[in-house]
Amino acid sequence: MIICSTDTLPGKKIVKVFGLVRGNTIRARHVGRDIMAAFKHLAGGEITDYTKMMAETREQALDRLTEDAEKLGANAIVGLRFTTTSVMQGAAELLVYGTAVLVEDGV
View 1 (cartoon, one colour):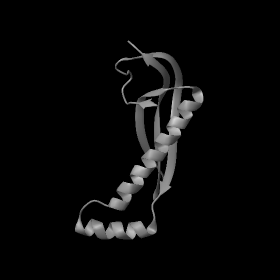
View 2 (cartoon, rainbow, N blue to C red):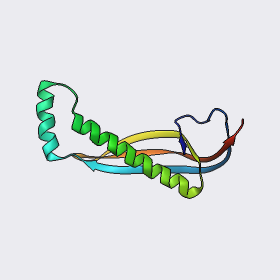
View 3 (tube, helix red, strand yellow):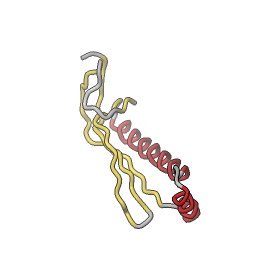
């Protein structure tokens, strides 16, 4: 599956547009991680537990996006975008969306 943020793919021709596809997940912070983050905030530096959590969250949302596109018969997703929304205190949704397309070699 080719995934890109641009609307076209160099060397590829879009032969069919399936439409909007999306993948999302909602994650809540962990109390133990919050305590460690508070200490890190005082000392400064990267909060690696949150960095890891966000990387896993992005991958899960991308996996769900890809599954959505594959169900339609797409072999590429163009116009990829990420967005986040606060759902409640301590929890947020990460949504990834784009346009599922069928591409072939050539311009």
